[in-house]
Image (cartoon, rainbow over all chains, first blue to last red):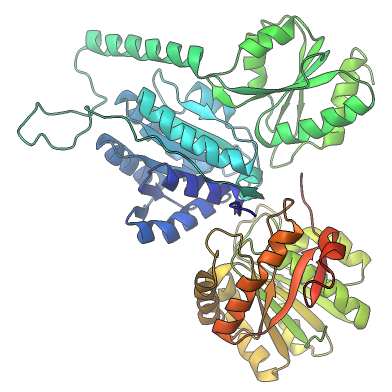
Length: 354
Length: 220
């Protein structure tokens, strides 16, 4: 009998965050992630935590900055237009080397766009997120269970590297319901000797700040931060390979697109086509190793995305453009069908003809 | 099963109201001709009755839903034909209300007329596998919130306890005590236990008033 519960992806993120020791949530409602805030509003008062609906996304991200400065686990969540509003705060969090968890349950854009699912904030999440040289660890769940698991992982990585982790989901992942198990052995958060917890007259003041008066000092801090990023690229990339052993065609997809792609791959395999999937779980750091290997093995890589083709650039870089990389996509809130992906696979297998 | 002129489905969001509502409407259509189902969900933008509009059309069931449902117009709109549910008493109606007390607020607009006509059944859909309603006490908390917001009282319970695609017959059997306890504490009868039709044969005879559900699906 089940210790499992039936949860929406958004609820799974919220409960997993609480399990991970996050007692502070600041948010502002926006479809399709509002259930995160609604769940936190119900749960936090019962466990002595803080739920606060801020007056705006910008206020919420700066509240995150405040709590992160004290060393406590903290999160906010939003959807695409709301995350754009948070981008100043994301940059300040990076500049002050503060750990936090940010959730983006993406919807169609640009602009106000729509409320249906999308993956078109890939560039924003992996290439920027705000001004200045910085990265966030970007985690891309493909099931409700992973929405929960990667939330816990996101907090751990954020603390380990003193930086922001972002859950990059989409509206479907947020809204769909699946059984999940939330049995975690949560390791205690690491010591945070940098946190502003009061000196008790026993130590020097800790200062949390992203302003540096000397350009030499600011340069040095940027160099050091990128040494840290290099270590993350070497050690933290996560991905799943599916039927890649003998694959002649490689499909690459994350999140909801990977689920659709798996259905298409199963169908193509029935037709005798040797096709497999590489599913990046971290989008930054992007898992380059499996693509280097695939580039020596397959004749084409198909990037399945709910965008006009954003991850495809990282695939080309990782595979060093050794094989053609093509795009199979839907946008604006639409989702590729397994049939559409199958067609792209058949076409690739026939050397570009249907 | 016996039905009143209006059957209302309410509950915690994610409890399975929409699937139960659709299947009750399918059943009613076999018993009587003029059946309508109303999507009054002002909360959930993604999974809702209107997603089944083709299926309903094929079955000859009238769908009353906001023209904005399922579009990018993200506002809590009510369908313009909503008043026909109470004004036209020749309709046998199923009303799918949005989740929680926030969803039930929409009911307040027509609840007085429904109560006045007094030919309705208001069903609380419950699922013990939802994280915020794992026991009778938390479920009854949701019940009271909905009654307060919707200005109408429940008359019976539908036990729709499930774990999605992983639900086993044992899970359903194990939920009977939970449903009975909700029933004891509230005095409301358990009208039926609803299960995915694939589990029906395994459970037939083991649970009273079993309602097989043909599930609405959107994406795998």
